[in-house]
Length: 98
Image 1 (cartoon, rainbow, N blue to C red):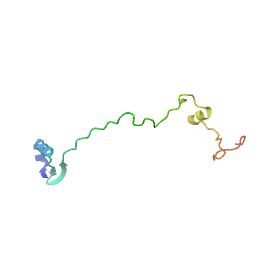
Image 2 (image 1 turned 90 degrees about the horizontal axis):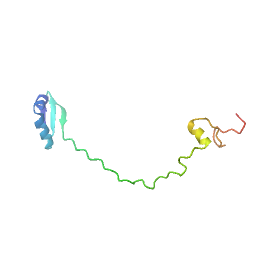
Image 3 (image 1 turned 180 degrees about the vertical axis):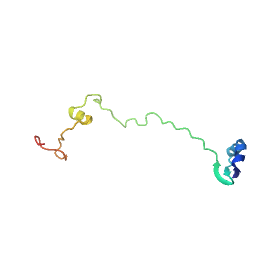
Image 4 (image 1 turned 180 degrees about the horizontal axis):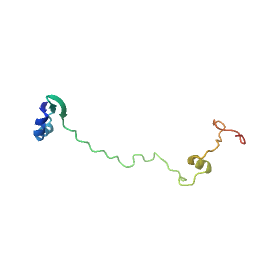
């Protein structure tokens, strides 16, 4: 590992980059105090392409996918308040009670 001051690093940057490419590490110092290190950047590995069809058979689109929704589900999805029909639901009340 070689230590060089900023002035020398600026003057001989190309030489130091060539040394780093050969596997050396260069430490850049300011007033003889280490500040930074020049090291070789690892080349990025190309992203592996995934083959088509990895999820084949894992999903199902029902035949009525594009059919209109029933009224209760439509109100539920639109944010309208609907009275729960399940007697175990905490907001359920018998018909006619408010």
